[in-house]
Length: 139
Image (cartoon, rainbow, N blue to C red; front, side, top):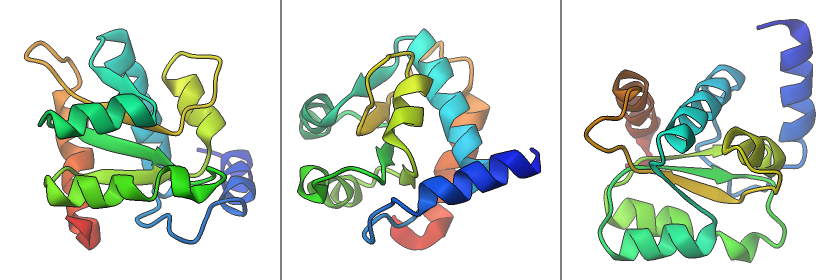
């Protein structure tokens, strides 16, 4: 990862809301985007607030990735609470545009729930990021 990546990350962090904690570091953000991309290719994701909330209410497990630059913030304020109630690890990433791109869609995406199936190939990365989110103290 070069200096350009760090400066681009820092520029995006300026637009993140104050409630976006735990915010993923630049390195972790890159790993999260990789996980989302692999999960999207394996059809193991729920995209958008409505779909994610519906999946959480139905009891689906997984890993939640939330964009920190959503405006108005009221759209996603209930997601961390829902995740904590259900013991689902989550991380905020700085950009909804980058999250949408990682999910292989042209639209910005506010949140994604990665729900790995039995034949999910990136289970090691998934477990590592879950452990990192839990160690951030929010689960």
